[in-house]
Amino acid sequence: MSIIDKAKSFMGGHGVTVRHATIEGAEPATAALALTTGGLRGQFAVVSDKPCTILSRQTEMVTEIQHADGRAEQVVLGRQITPDPDVAPDPDATPAAAPTEGTAATVKYPYDLAAGFEVVDEFDLVFDGSIEAVLGQRVLLPGSDVRFFLRTRVDVKGSPFDPEAVDELPLRR
Image: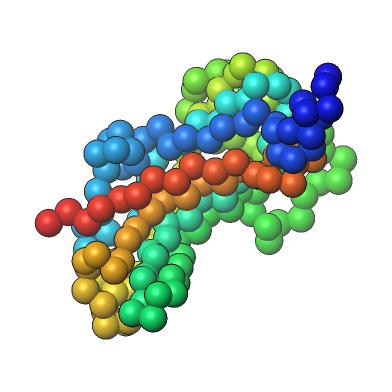
């Protein structure tokens, strides 16, 4: 392994990629939100170029507000973290085997991911109120100064940088 390859590996070159496979049963590029939306379900996929251990994942629905003074504020509407940080992990547990490639199942974290394999997992977010309520609390109207996006991040063992998938979701009119 060359020095450059070693540096890439150290700086997060774990070869893991994350993508949203479906959002509310639709392709991410065609998914949209309604003002009354109170949650989202879907699937995401994780694939790796080399063997690694996936420790956990976090999926969030985020509202980003651009203020008149130029600063951006991110408000998390809903978050799901797996495994649940409020539940103590079993210290004797070893990483689970990854589910069969390409299957959607409840994945047990942590799990080992073999090179070239893809694991599909599901997310089910419940928002802290509807989008309409969140915008109303801040006296904002849906428009160019507000955007919504879904973000899923996985924690890769031994990596200082964790891969994530981000998909912007427009409001349906």
